[in-house]
Structures are given as structure tokens and as C-alpha cells.
Length: 290
Length: 282
Image 1 (spheres, one colour):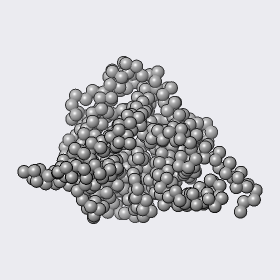
Image 2 (cartoon, chains in turn red, cyan):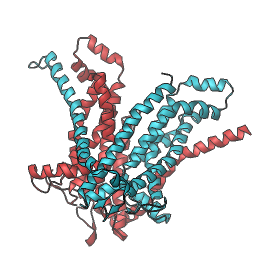
Image 3 (spheres, rainbow over the protein chains, first blue to last red):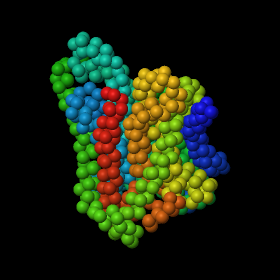
Image 4 (cartoon, rainbow over the protein chains, first blue to last red):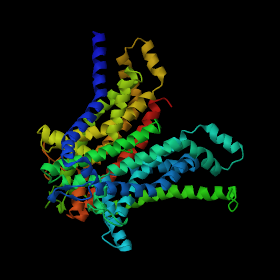
């Protein structure tokens, strides 16, 4: 009898283990079965490289949104990478214990603040500041990238801090014993050794930035056109779905699922690149909660 | 290489730069939280927390939103925890590193990296339309469970690995069966870690709005069952802010959300860690 119980428990656990695969397959099936036929009938290239998105006249070119998403994300990375890497090195190498004890919950809280709260803060505080200093409406690619910078800081900091801590102690000791200063050791030994992990951290941050929806909608202006400067309003792929899904029907509805497929493929590419760098220890993609 | 700045001075300058980066990070958090709390705390009082919204949120309180948030968070955790912990136990205790485990990891990694709005679309297509469940807190809770699952799975895995092997060996040597060992010895020792994972998943579910945008229905009324539509706090904040309904109530809602996240962070950092030290005998 006992053996039967053990057997059933093992099979039950096997099912729970399989569920994440089943869920991901369900998601893929439901998104692709709605979006793919549309992409085929509209034309893959026309959809991805089309520069006009105007559902009322039947134009579904998604390129301005791809440019918008990538633009906001790269700008956010430009701001976030220096600050978060400095902070990660600070936490792993320099900070005294008390500062580390303060910074750890600070970064956890930054990661935990709901994205809508970030968006709200951007809308109320950042947009008016931008309007005064840079003119225009204040809703822009630049504003969105600043909000995203703050949102991806905790992801990049915590994953690269892990990578830096993962470096064997001997490396550091050997460098110090040779008479290098602490900074020289960090610059020439510790940081280079941690680069695969740091690249993973940056890619995870990038994934979070590309996937962010409501915070971006609240500050980016959401005009479906190519931006010419960074203070132009842009629309991200995610925003495109969130804004129009509420009233979309027919082909328009399917086109939004097509947008989701594009988003999905970008995320898969990032995932493959992240796995290529093979920093297997404690990878948490997207969520940024670890 | 660099003759203008000697290595000693470079060391001093960089130390300053590193300290500055740490302090800037703290200041960023303080500005955001401080601003939200200073503007929002005066709005929060008992009526705000316990009353229904009046005139689509222009005045009145946020009671139905708090209830909606509690319901979907509970459903998400209730569904995701057994699946996540079960999968972690299976991966760590019942199988070796093989193609199946690799597939499960790939699935969970992909699940963790899918943008929340794609979850939202899936929820709409699958629960609302395909299963004819309509807009409901239940559908929203399940979508959030899917989102919280990888977090709970990964953290549970890490905490099961961290349980000393000697614990399991002791139990097996005393004649305990595999499941008895897992249930009576390994899981209790891993509980603090698993709890952290569950709380992180809970925080993620609690603060999510995009994934449930098209699934929960955004109704203002007090939900009477889990199959009613509702409007959780983040969604309420989004609607109040973007439709310019009431700035004061938006501040209040944002402050409630920030307070919830602060409480969760404090709890995981103090209570769980203290308990963890006790259980792991450190």
C-alpha cells in the first residue's frame, strides 16, 4: 500500500513539474493561432517593416513601435548600465556592512514597487519637469527611458552583484599581493572575470524594459510614428497592444496578437543570448525579483 | 599608462565614485517613495479604506479595490504555490539533470520572461473568450498564478538545494520512505526559503496591472464572489491617473500600494530570515 502511495505522489509531482511547460505551450498556441494567420494574409514583411499603423484605413505596419520599443530600451540601458554596475561593484567590493544592510532592502523595494506607481510618478513629476526644460508636451521617449532606467536598476544591480561575488577569492588576493590597488584589482581582475554574468544582468534588464507596458504608456506619449529626436513621443510594442485591445475587433484584433508575436520573438532572442553567456546561477529573467 | 593620475589618487577618486553610486541609488528610492507617501498619506483614512468609490472614483474610497486585490492575490498564491513547490521537489528529489529537467527549466525561464501584456492577451483569448468565463477575478487570479509560478519554482528549488544532505540521509537511515523524508524533513527545513518565494510571487501578483487589464473587467462595484469582475488597486491607480479622474485618490491608492510593498519587504527581511537561521541551525 505504501508503495502505491509513493508512486502516486511521484506521478503527481511529475505533473506539477510539467505544468510550466504546458502553460507556456498554451500561451504560444493561443497567441500564435490568432496572430499568425493575420501576419500571413497581411504579409510578414509588410507587417514588420510597414511604417504606417492606422487601423481605421487598414494599415498595420509595426515598425514604428519596434523602433519605439528599442529606442526607449537602449536609452534606458545607456543611463542604467553605468549607475547599476558602479552600485553593484560598490555592494560587492567596497561598501561596509552597514551600507550593504541598507542597500539590499533598498534594491528589493525598488524591484517591488508596482510599475503603475513608477508610471504615476513619471506622469506627475517627470512629465512636467520635461515640459518646462525641453519644451513639447513632456511625454517623450526620453521621459519613458528615465522611468525605465529606475525600473531596471534593481535587476541589473542584483544579478551583476551576484556575478561579482561569484569570482574566486584567489583572483583578488593574487592581484592585491602583487601590489595593485583595490581599484586596479577591480578594473583589471574582478570586473573582467565577471563579464559573462554582467552581460546576463544587462540582458535581463533589457527584457524587463522591453516588456514594460503601463509605466511606458503613462509617460511616452504613444504616437505611432517614427521619433526624430529623443524628445519626440513614441509608442512601444507593449503599449500598442494595451491601448487598442479595449476596442479592437476583427483584423485589428488579430493585428494586436501579431504585435504580441513580434514582442515574443524579441524576448526569445534575448533569452537565447542570455543562455549563450551561460551564467546559470540564479537566473531570473524579466521579473527582477531575485 | 596614466601619468596624470597616480594609482593612489585613482583609487581615492574611484572609491568616491562608488560611494556616490550607492548613495544615488538610495536617494532615487527615497525621492519616489517619499513623494508618493507625502502626497498620498494625508488622503488615507478609515473612510478611504472602507468606503466604496463614488462617481467612478472622483471621491469616496477604495474598499472594493482592496478586496479585489486580496482575492486575486490569494487565488494566484493558492494556485501557484503547490505547483511551484511540487515542481521544485520533483526536479531536486525525483530526477537527475536530464532532458526533461532542462525542458522544465526552459519552460519556467520563458514563462518568467514573457511580458505581462502578453499574459494579458492570453488571459483574454483563453479564459475570457475560449473558456467563456467572462471578465472575472478568478480568471485574473489564474493569469497571475501563471506569472508568479516561475518565481516560486526557482526560489523553492534554491531553498531545497540549500537543505543539508545529512538531514535527508538521517531520515532515510532511520527507515523513512522517500516521501516521508521530503514531507517531514526536507520541506520543513526549506520552508523559510519557500515562504520568501511565495511572498515574492505574491508581491508580483499584487502589483501587476497590465496582465489583468483585459481579464478582470475593471468593475467598480464590490465583488461578491470570485467570479465577479473587479478592479484591483494597480488597475484602479492606472485608470484614475490616465483618465484624470481624481489626483488625490490616485495619490492615496499609490500610497496604499507602496505601503503594502514596504511591509512585504520588511517582513521578508526580518521575520523570514530570523526563522530561516533557526531552522537551518545556523
